[in-house]
View 1 (cartoon, rainbow, N blue to C red):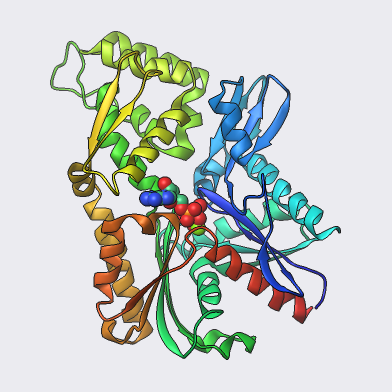
View 2 (view 1 turned 135 degrees about the horizontal axis):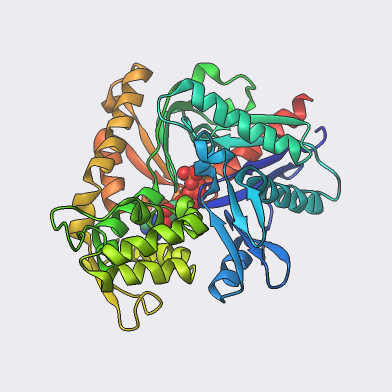
Length: 421
Ligand SMILES: Nc1ncnc2c1ncn2[C@@H]1O[C@H](COP(=O)(O)OP(=O)(O)OP(=O)(O)O)[C@@H](O)[C@H]1O
Ligand SMILES: [Mg+2]
């Protein structure tokens, strides 16, 4: 085996770092022994340091003065990548912020390996930007150039569902036609792959990959629509102007507050003055006051995280109460699963449609798919699982490790690359 290659699953919500060792591919412990790290970064202005992952979220939750950023993968390929955000007295570009996070992952891998490492394989969604080949290429180039600025000399990419297929394949006992579904925080990605116990020895797998497909829908979109549907109305979303009662207040601040990677954009000076004016003209200023308070006290990520928690709890309950004292002292918002599922039904349908397209392009019938391999956190939602299963009705459903499968598959790929060099 040559020099180790680092395997990075830079996820919208969670990331992993893998290495292929003589004992086989493995994920390395990233913080407090955990094999995953939330893709979060906190610029702690009080202690003048940059924190990552759970530590970043804890510092933010404990009200340290600073700036939290999450879901940064979502800005790749969008115009936001060239934006910067105010952090203390400085403006820091989103590119540099992603760079700091990747540099942290690189340092952890090097510490584990006990040496400098400058070659990496990244997972990537089938589409960073839906159906736009040019922007999609641009997104990958952006990630590559950020990685090179962190000191990586050689940068490889592998589709996330193919990585998950490699992980699944390490456990199969016979040849199967598998639909691999990786439904994460930002995207849903699919591959139809022929897997078999012998195939992992082959270096060229192109003939076994029958089709790939993906759509930019993931758990963060479900969070957004739960928030806009059932929480943001309590902060004035959908209410009207005082003098023009047929005209709704602008929706953009609410969309920003409900969208993980846009929350920070609300914290600039320009936005503060626009919100004050909106408050003055509002027909229900008491509700809009709550929006202003969240923005002023920078509790947008706490709100997003509470909504996310409620989304997860709705998997096993019809109704969930979210206590929001930092929005308004006694505010408790009840959210229900029926309204949530209805509101995201179009997204769920698109996920099912994307699977049908993938199978169609593979040139096989849905009935020929032997196995549906599910990974990614959002595959925990029952109605999402049902949408996947109904697209391949004869398939046996196998659940992978929801947060580690892509990372482990990338570590397998890293081993193949390292052996070739
Ligand atoms: N039990 C659960 N029920 C529903 N959703 C869940 C559950 N656990 C985690 N999630 C959601 O899964 C998502 C994170 O999944 P995952 O870590 O696979 O994404 P990711 O790899 O970071 O994203 P991507 O691959 O799209 O870039 C989040 O939106 C989270 O809310
Ligand atoms: Mg993922």
